[in-house]
Image (cartoon, rainbow over the protein chains, first blue to last red):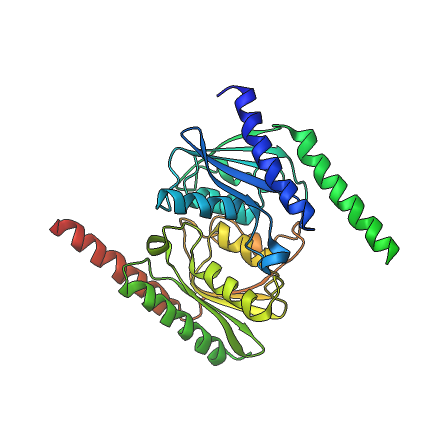
Length: 157
Length: 157
């Protein structure tokens, strides 16, 4: 898979992140790709659904499971704008995702490179290939914009 | 909280595990308790829902979030028959559960005591109290029974 194809899928994940941004959710987006086709899309909906499980990766994985009618997402890859947290990394392992591509690291909660490196832990029953840094500037910029605007709103109130 | 009250809630989690057992799912059950009331129940439904995210803890947490209309399960405790995996441990941290009580360890995938100890990791933005060993014999027995029966069925075919 060439870099430009990876960027194409990450752009689709960024479109998802933008959907979260405009409704006031932390702007993280994800897509699941199977045989070159996007079969799951998700963006963070924690506040709107009142559900701490409703992260972008979980939403995309569940949609992909529905599409394939299987909990095993064999030969599927996941693209996500920000490094997955522990919950999402665990969901990626549990659903047997093949490869994960993420944009920017999350030093406070990332479980793929930052706090933990769970996707490549060979004690688990499944390991996941990891590539980071795809469109990382755009992926981190939308987060910076979001939190800057949130701080501004807070100051006004 | 006395041991007998903990056992009472673990019995409710075991009832959930039994619901999974009778429909051929790995028999793990969980409940979320708030102010002495069970506000979320869940059992493993991975095969029936074709969804790798559908673990007992996730189902119980999502029901509890719906009950409280909040993703923050403040002052809530979770009882689960088997040590949570990485995904569920991450969901427990993300939803700000106060205390986790589990029955038996899962040496192959447990992320609370066995492979990882994520609930007490002080690098995370939330820590969770952990008590293990509540009705551990019953919690592991239903798993042993399930896998023994599964092996028998496999031999017959």
